[in-house]
Length: 105
Image (tube, rainbow, N blue to C red):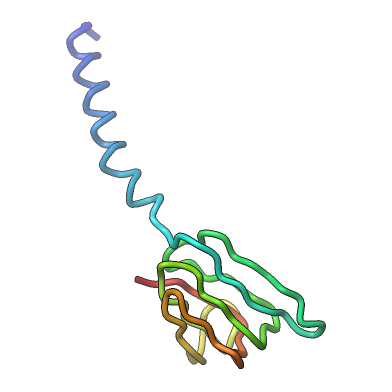
């Protein structure tokens, strides 16, 4: 491969990575705090990914959405079934009961 072709290929690769990587790194910024039962054990998700499902076990009680995304709380694990509540960015809920959570824009 000629030196010029190598330079062009390297530039194209860098351009593709620059365009592709920012979308892959997107996600909520901040923390989501909830409590698992029994025992009211505090759990925290830091900077959770967009549209990724996080199983929470038997979560119940106070929830604080300190992220910049809406938290959708699901009745079942795997973010299946009914959404029991939505918690907007910066909001909290006092009596949330859920088994999984997903963060959306």
